Length: 108
Image (cartoon, rainbow, N blue to C red):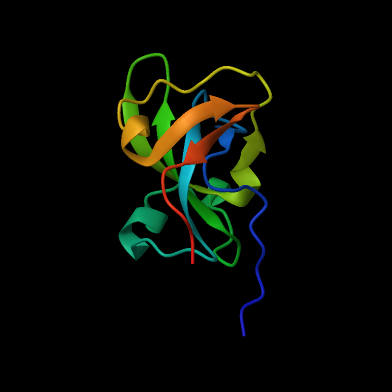
């Protein structure tokens, strides 16, 4: 049985350790759940291990907004206190408060 615990939570603002982008967590996979093709496209020396949480982010950088899929080892909490401006945030989240967005829905 898989016993992985996610470090970051839905609605939390995080940033990438190596690349200049940040985002809001909107989903978490307990382990890698993307395609092998996607995984193989990552340079071998930078590939994260698959048996860790992977996060779906509404992400932004200086040029654009997009959805990112990032391993836990490549994320850090963002303590800037600045909201993320991704245009899809209002579809999933409510107010920004203390570094997180409130969820619009309840989890079971």
